[in-house]
Image (cartoon, rainbow, N blue to C red; front, side):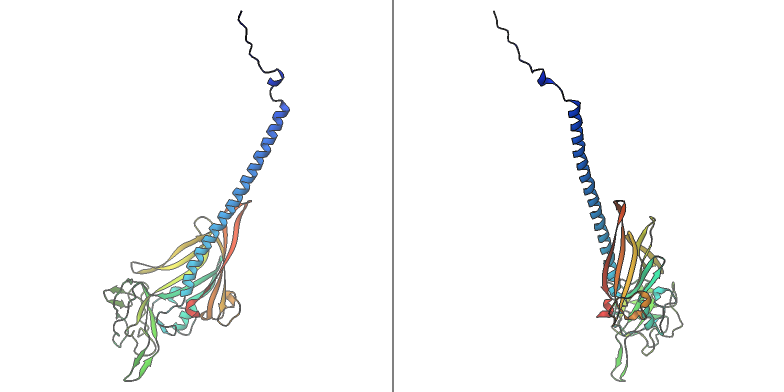
Length: 337
């Protein structure tokens, strides 16, 4: 007789399921753990957004400060000498021709090449410099004694110069050992009528063109023409300000002069988005503190500017955008050295 083998099964008590109370406790514990994990995730996400937004604002501000500093340091530059007696024959009263408050064109240049002002969105800054192109055109020979227009300026090359460009020609003065005649460095702002080969033509033709009201390109002392080894530079006026962007917000803008087929016009470049305010303060030579534009009596004496740029990020942290005010100080190198 074969033995019957019976397979042992679990005891009835050991096979029972999870009770409702145990299930509810498990769910509550699970929700607590999930909630804690979610809270940590949300907190980390807010921290990440805040860090990323601050980093973006700081990078944008750094870019703005770098571009502004380049223009500020060069403001008022005349390649030959800061003591140059300057004439202006451009037939225009636009700000970029350096016409402004002053008894003569030299004072006008000094007062307008670095000038703080205000617009509807706050402080703004106007800067003008005469900067040589990559290859500097140099006056080869003194032009005829009669420097009245039209005049062909003989140079070694016209690389980087085009018809219609706003230019400055200056020299380092004049001395005749035979007659002992001498004069200080002189310069003139003009618009090139044409530029080809080794000649820059200067006449009243163009947009806006040059004025025939001054009998000579240089004033007031003879010889009233650029002397040999004088330099020709491109006049580069810019303005910095806060304005409305195309997205309904505020941005930092830079206006510059452009030459389009011989006609001069202004182009507005958006430099930095999310910039909501620009506060400028100025250090006047001999002063011991920075002052607002309204307290500057003589802009030719400003040697440094303090820039405060207010920035507002697009990402919201705890319901509000990240806002920062960043500061930078720049010396007007052309006046401080």
